Image (spheres, rainbow, N blue to C red):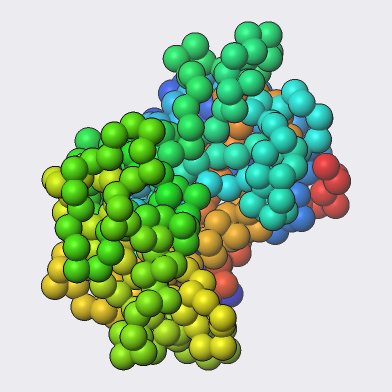
Length: 421
């Protein structure tokens, strides 16, 4: 990196931090805010408080450790105001490449030991691919094909935690936080984004959220289209039929209802098309897909409206592998439907960068406030790095750019090894 470019990045970083300082409250929080963000964007294997203190203030590590610990764990500043400022500074840079196409609901998990870190429970951990002790956070990100930015982020509090007054008190969980399922948190975030006037996009859900009919209905009530991953047993009305009245409670459902798997395997060969949707690491990605207009069984009975059923059945597989429901318009092109369904790759890769580049999962405190403050500052640091890309390239071996490394003033250069967390 040339000296002039390094100096330019330093100036833009200083300006970016000043933007955050303007909403952080007391001016005495400016130093810890700047140092915390510096620690997050600088190289380092661990982005918890202790090694960041050694990195940013090697000659007074103990004092810096206390300063950063208090700032992130107890500082009475607003996550919402900081995230709003990040959106205001970063979103125009993202939209310069392309308009926002989608809102993606996702959750991310953090393996933990013990039972005292806020929200930790034995639950499914995506990072490990199995049930384990972990924390899970639900997020909403706005996305185009070149970048994404989380705009809402909240820890899922399991029912045992929500009802345990003693653990809530020790972790300083706000009184207004009650038990909500992850789909309920997701719908609340989507509703907030609509009220906040964020640029709208198609809501994308994986099967963990897409199977929830109440969530899909709530999205439709907000006048948003969705592409929702669903499971193979999901019932729809048989092709060419209309749903009857909604079944009575306790009944088995409509007599002409079929699972989406039954519908897919009954399609003729000419229903399937090979579609390429984007460039992958080594080659262009393509697969076989079919789509048809159907009614979802038991969704309001006679008042149901048709949706797209999209099915993926790769060559060589014994049966279909993925299914989606979508309320995108009837005139939507086949390839556009596939590309929208597959756009979730963007958030999966960007969350990997959030964890690896800026240490989203490295927070070691136990409290509610610290957990969310750390996440907010990680999103802020990540937002700066995204905005610093000269271009925001799509995924691919010939086009992927590394996030820039900051060239910082002398006062921020480490003069010793970081302390292991």
